[in-house]
Length: 254
Image 1 (cartoon, helix red, strand yellow):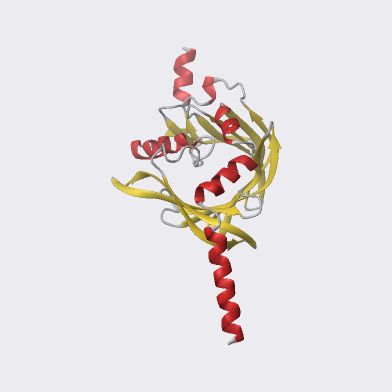
Image 2 (cartoon, helix red, strand yellow; image 1 turned 90 degrees about the vertical axis):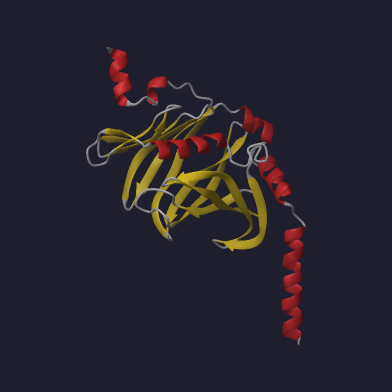
């Protein structure tokens, strides 16, 4: 009987902990702790550089994201530069690892990617106005930390011609109210349909806003890629040709 009473007490305590915080209160605390919602909205762009690691190979990486949707990821591996998910506002393209040539994504991939450009600097900013739904699912331990588990449903994606929900689960640390992990399903590529997890840590302040300087990506529990940022710059000056498909650069020179 004593064991039963103890279990009941713990269960009631967990229920109270969940009810004590609404999802909007969690998000309000999150935005306040990382620098303030209005400060986040004023950022026009981010430029990041650091080190990426895949298996045992380390290489320099760079990331550019602008408020107007344009973005680019690049990596220098053994003297070769690869660009991935480069978006100029209309065209989405990447470097083919086998041919080393730039290839445009198809219309479906481009349309899905364009939807996600609405989420600069954070998908939870003005989520109601964007038509997203957010739900607090309770408390859960993630990687040894007590967290609030929050379900985010965004605009549906088009996968193989059919609409599918775009669902992800965020785990907010209950002490600092910052996300330490995100779970979702891979919707394209060789890992399509498999579970994906991204962990975030080492939050550091840059011009009054806190960013996770370390991220790791897992597929089905296996580490596939990690990034450690060394420098983050807000509102950088970026040339338009950084995002342009190589053929467009060639035509411009003519």
